[in-house]
Length: 281
Image 1 (cartoon, helix red, strand yellow):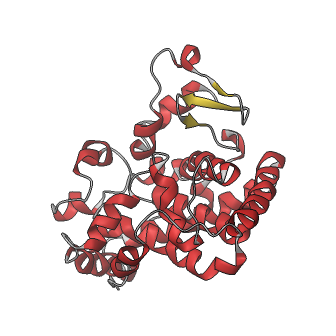
Image 2: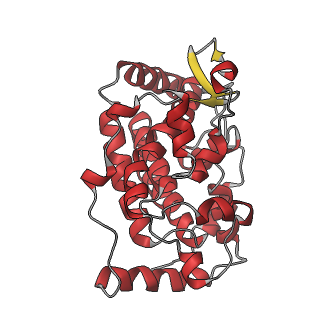
Image 3: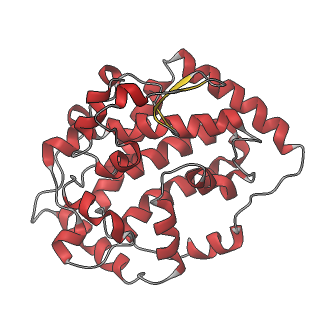
């Protein structure tokens, strides 16, 4: 992927762009992870498996966002109203943590559902899959975000968000569909394939990862549903890429082997489970 593509995406998808922002001299700053032979967009931030021209086209795949006055829009409003009551709870705190797409922190989001720690040391192929597919999922929402430029909930209701430092970026960025929901669902589908014995827990966590964006007051319910759909389309397209398939098979083997060693997730899974008991519907 070229530098101009990532520069252009900055104003269309600033949450993701904030972690992959390229300086004017990005061609000089590009480096390579020699062990994985993956080019970095900038130090620590990896390119995806898909080239821009083969990403799912979210405008072609999605209907327009719900129109004001429609039943779907009323549902968006009702779910948002209920979610605002969670401000200050441990579910709000989990939603703030789910907003962080930077690694290694982001790798921990699904560790309780998987039942294993996800680290570069212990599960390097899985870690690489999660890192690289941030770009694939996120950029797949690009066209619809540009097309519709839907206002985010906090702009409409003037209530706080769980990540105030990202407010300036989010104001300039379309709400529909949710990039975080797309990323979370891509991760869930990948992990469900790698560890089918944990699939129900993994898919439930993928759902809640997207719902965190509703609780953060930065996305509407319909944004999250649309984001999951785009995430599923991205995973389908990823399976046509030999590099992705090879990494996936390697990750299956390493997770199966790692599970025999008795390691447990590094995060507090009881607290996570308690936080996920909150209902926004």
